[in-house]
Each structure stands twice: as C-alpha cells, then as structure tokens.
Length: 337
Image (cartoon, rainbow, N blue to C red; front, top):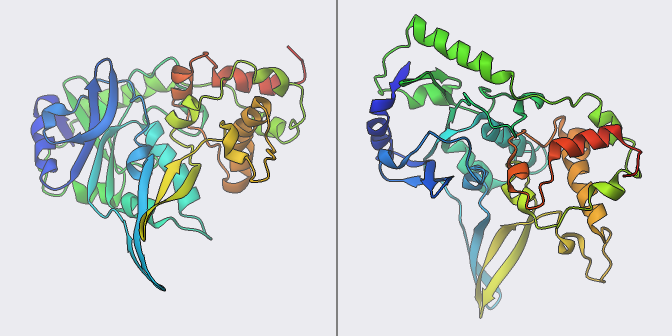
C-alpha cells in the first residue's frame, strides 16, 4: 500500500478522531513527539527527535495512584491510562527500544500494569531512515534504518509517497477501512533500493565486546574513560532504553498520590544509602555501571544489548563523549591514557 505525501495530512486528520495521535512536531530547530490535533502539525522531514518517544509509554513523571486515608481505612484509585494512541513516524531504533523495555516491564516475575496498558493500546507506525545521521549505528545492534521489530506498520519514503508495509496483525487491523492504494512494482523496487543504501551507513564493530565486559570490571581503562563525564544525566534522559526510576509519595493531610519519576545511575544520589555510604562514590563507578548495565548485565538477564544505536547520547553530551569511541576503548582495554 502507499500514502501520497500530498494526502498524508488528511490521513492523519481522520486518525485524530479515533486516537490520540502523537507525531514529530518541529519546535525551533528540533523535533519532539507531541499530540497533534491536525495532520498539518506533523513533520516527517526529521532525522530523529531530541528525546525518545519512550516517554509516551513510560512517562518521565507519572502518578500511579491516588489515595485518601480515613482512620483505619483507605480509598485508593489507580491511574491506568487506557486511551487508544498512535505513535506516527517513530524511527525503527525507537521501536526496537520498546521491545527491550518489554523485557523489563513484562517479565516472567514482574509486570508493570501502567506501561503495559499503554503498550497494548498503542499502534506504532514507523518511518524508515533513508539518510541516517552520522551518529547512528543501529545496524550493529540487531536493528537497522528500516528494521521492523516492535512496529505495527513501517513507512518507506520513496519521494512523493510512502510505501506502507504491514508488520503485525494490529497494523493490518489499523488499516482496515483506510482504502489505501496498493504499491506498484516500481514503488516496491524504490523501497528496496532505499533500504539497501541506508543500511550500509550504520555499522560499527562490536565483535568481542561482551566477552571483554565479562572480565574487565577492574580494568584500568575505567580510570580514564570517565574523566570527561560531568554526571549530568543528559545521556540517560535522552536514551530510549534507560528505565531506572524512583517512587515517592506526595502527601497533604490524609490524601496523597504515589508518583514514579525517571532516575539515572549517573547521579550520586542514585545509590546513596540512608547510612551515608555510597557503593558508587565517584564518577568512575557510576560511568562503569552505565556501560556494564547496557553491554553486560542486560545481556546476561535478557540476551540483548540495552542500546539501539540511535546516537542521542552522542548528540546531547555537553562534553562530546562518543559512546562508539568508549566501546572501542573498552574493547582495546588495559592501556592507561
């Protein structure tokens, strides 16, 4: 099937009557995923959003439930979001990140009802990357500029229209009644060419990285890798796979609410004990934890790297730390610099 670019706005207008539609919206020079009320607000001419659309399903701050305590009884109201949503135009790396988050929030032992409710009620319409950024390396992490993992539909830009590829049953059901024309032979050939060209641009060598991480906890390499890091958390808050959070109660008199907020292993308070002891007392330990988590512990627990190669941490780091160079230095290891 195809969607002509000249008809995209009207297509989105129809969706806004049935779903909450979230799409890339340009603000200044940057793009953010935000709810739209009209198709003209969506701008698909973007490289990637500043922050990941992860926050739509796993908000930076959310109320889990409200409560009112009266004597020995308490009235509690859970705040589950069951609204139907469409995330339109997200990149394949961001869709892949949600597959990784599924492993955390939908595990065998624990399931997070707040994340899962949004996940079940959200359709993911991806947009392939015809021209990946120079900071992208998704193809090295079992993904790619036109990867479909986690998506329900994938759009491939072929000039004046998008080829629409159905990925899941949810995606097929979503298109029911849309009356989109079928893609012709030339359309499919153009889509295949776009995929082949983009894939070559997004690779780095990660061979042997996990094996190195298994044995380098005390490697001198950590002594210099962390030196530039400010511990500001820009990398973790822009990362589509970071999922650490803190929970607190906001109380006034007998009423209150329980709130979940993103947290980050780069912050000194993250592991500070009530006694005052901190098992990660310096930037070295916190920097090491971030990389150990993504490239060793997550692999041990879930069988995948906790990184999708989106490059946001490279773009947002105020001191120009490049995760690709850090990984290369870890692989090299041992030599103090």
